[in-house]
Length: 196
Length: 113
Image (cartoon, rainbow over all chains, first blue to last red; front, side, top):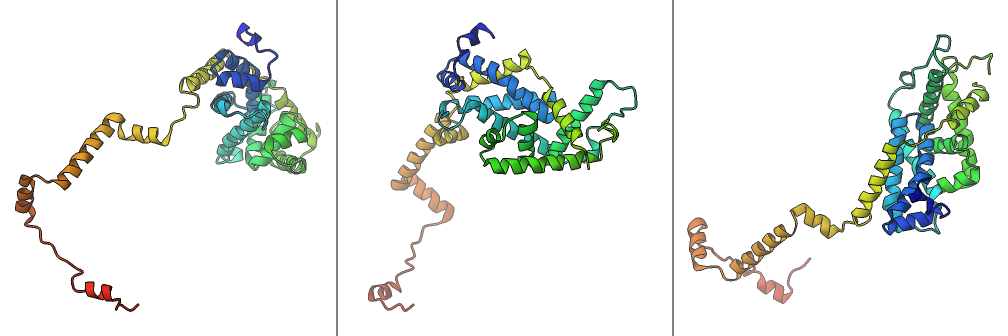
């Protein structure tokens, strides 16, 4: 943590946002240090693309800067808002991938060739992101928040502004759909039947 | 049916991804923050400001106002030379009273629906 951020160490996110809205750039620095790693990680998990994830992080933070003067602390937590905006921006980008047929993206790595584990991991992560892109946006968001971010169903309900029951239904359907989409790519991704 | 282990493995793989932002990204984000602040926070542009910008700002408004006043003045008190010039150009104006034949009807209420 930089000296600039140190003075804000124990301040709540909303206080930092308020200070930034008042023109304090050290608060913006502290808030960025706190939130950007989280946003970038969330976007990277959903998109499996570093450059796109950085664009999402910058876009999400820009929206936060713009909304700062109107921020109402009684309506939402900053982190909840950030999860929401980031997952929306990610599904927007995933939707654009839908125009590409699934068999033309995430060229699978043949696990029987001498490829590195890293290459196979990359292929798997890309395949997961491409499969998420095939889901309806709400399902993709719910599944990602549940299984990639590890949020609880009530937390997801807050982020997505819906009931816990609706979240449970979305995540269950989303997970089943993901499994169906990825079924045909199992061997190509190195998941042989006898291994799993 | 795909066994759940495959999906769980993919989820775990994704969760393990670390993505620390580099300095360049942080610099871009803080530059955005500074820009937004410099722009009067959120650069709230009113409809009037947008209109002004669209037509070219206050100098244009001044020109439009002057032209409007001049037009009104010409309409109220046209210079004699203008009347002569327009008469030469488009002929002498003739006034036709289209209601002259029916004005009686209106006043006597004899028009049936």
